[in-house]
Structures are given as structure tokens and as C-alpha cells.
Length: 235
Image (spheres, rainbow, N blue to C red):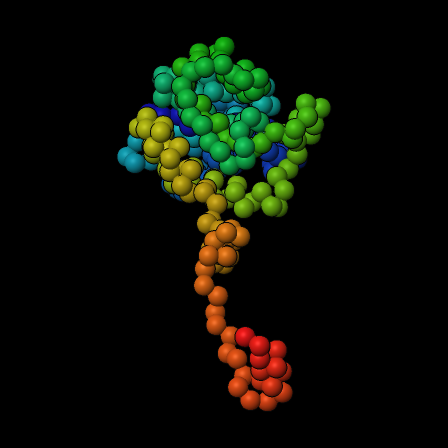
């Protein structure tokens, strides 16, 4: 059995926060594979289903983010799921919006959810970092993280969540690089329209001087012809 955990804060006021992208990913997976109904268990919302023939428990801890570890530990212990079979999806400030990175083990990077999980589960679980971007200044971080996604964010957020759900099976089989490649392809910006044919490269003055000039027809009759005859009569 595998355990997929989406991190976030419970409550309608947090529903669309950037900090809740882990919950959003869990919901997308739940829809994609038709998991059973969410049930309130082990201090979280728990649902059971299958992905690629693998039995999977899907968890959204209902404690606040910084207490997520208790819920994760309870589920892992109850179902006898080893840390290596636990995958946690969460928001990452230090990744550009829509970027995804996966790794096993490592530090918590200052994330309160991981900081709560590590002491209770250990560090050898899979971490799926979902980029939400950095606001650019430390004093703006809390407002950014606890702020709602903007409407314009849906241009990358919706495809990201769809791709995470569609390719979640790769995480279960340990194909982390394959998962990241699939997400990158699915969220790649549409190709820009081809530009108009570029203007020809300007020629140097020397090259321009060497090239033959088009011949100009000389009038044989009329006032201009008479003037030219007088001008060049002495040649």
C-alpha cells in the first residue's frame, strides 16, 4: 500500500491559498481515479482507491499545517506503510510557479508541514515540491503564502494539477524523473507564433559600392532629351 499526502490548512478561508496547493493536488488525484469518499479519520480526511493496480490511501491532514505530522504518522502506523512508500505534496516558495521537483529525504527547507512530519515519520519519504514562486521580499512571504491564487494563475495551475493527477502512478513506481518530465511537458507554455520574415541584413558600404547599379533609361525625345544633348555636346 502507498500513502499520498497533500498538505494544506483546513477551513474554507484557506481553500484557495497558495499554501493549500498540496490539498488541491490531492483533490485532483481523487477525481482522476475515482477514489472512495473522504472520511474523517486519524486527524485528517482519508480516501482509498487504486492507481495502476496499486492500493493507495490519500490523506489531507485536517490539523493546521504545522501539526500535519501527527496525522501522517497515525495513518502510516495504522496501515503499516513504510516511509519510503509515503509521498508528500506541498508548496515551495523557492521554485517558480508551476515548476515541480521530487526527491527522497533531505531537509525541510523551513516548511512547517515537513518540519512537523520529519520527527514523527523520519526523513526518508518522497517529497513533491510544487512551485508557487517567491514574492521577492521576506516581509511579503506570509501574505503571499496565505494569499489566494490570482485568476491569472489558473493558466499554469490548472494544467499543473491535471498533470500531477494523470501521472501520479509514476511516483508510486519510483520513476521520479519520468514524473518530472511529464509535468514539464504538460505545463510547457504554448509556442509563440512565428514572427514575420526578418528584414534582410544590411550590407556594408563597400559591398554596396561593388554591386552593379541598375541602368536608368535615357530619354531620346522631349525636353529632357534636348537638355541632355546640349549638356554632353562637347563629349
